[in-house]
Length: 297
Ligand SMILES: C[S@@+](CC[C@H](N)C(=O)[O-])C[C@H]1O[C@@H](n2cnc3c(N)ncnc32)[C@H](O)[C@@H]1O
Image (cartoon, rainbow, N blue to C red; front, side, top):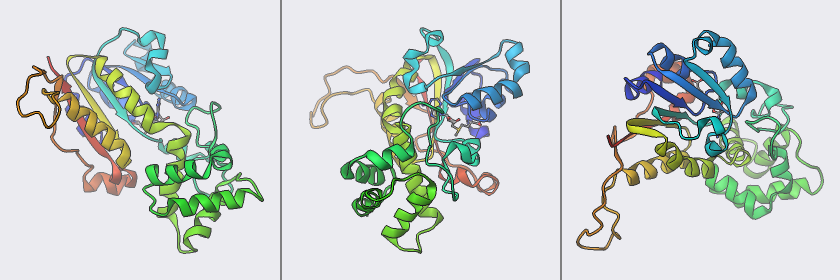
């Protein structure tokens, strides 16, 4: 959704790209004339985009930063820095999915890893082998929209009591063991995504980060977020709506007396979706929801 991102961030002289990935959005912003600071928690993404966009690094307009945007306060060089635009294109990159050694895919033999930041934290296998049945059911239900989450959680716990989960085949086996042999790619994609969201603490992290990112915007600056998961999009929608609401009185109070002033306004009332051409070119864009918000000047 490069065109929509560029349209929303039109004229922004400085942009914080929170999710560098393959660098497609950063490159388009650089080509549009912006200076870009781009974060990724994946060292491979930083190295590859730095090499590909080296001419912009050398000219001082592009600064890749290894870090986690949900812990932006832990990146000293970004303290007290303001931007005209903030962009986050959430989730996982094609490079991460395509590389079997990163462990995001449900292809046979792939080790259950899924850590975006490489070596830090619990792997997918750690979570499947150690989380309680209740925790697993919550992961499958809350992050995978799975109505039979408890049944799958029970199956995982039953299977791991005799043999621990190591590869994608072990989790695929548990999904098939729960839902039958007809379970296929759509179920695997949804439930592997649920585990990935848990491994990378994606939803709580996003909720924590949004107000910090909003506060890094200059007056009149614009925030653009692209979400691929309904829970993620809900967090973005609620945050942007709350920031756009002037009145903070309790909902049942008949007369407003808070004197509240909205922090800004949504640029589009509803989320923007990728058009048919883009979906044909990149099927992953089908689930993308872009929302944009402008801070009051
Ligand atoms: C969908 S890709 C971004 C693609 C990018 N916009 C492009 O044009 O190529 C998401 C990227 O964000 C990174 N990422 C996800 N969550 C992150 C976080 N909390 N902090 C930093 N990077 C994160 C992932 O490692 C991945 O490389």
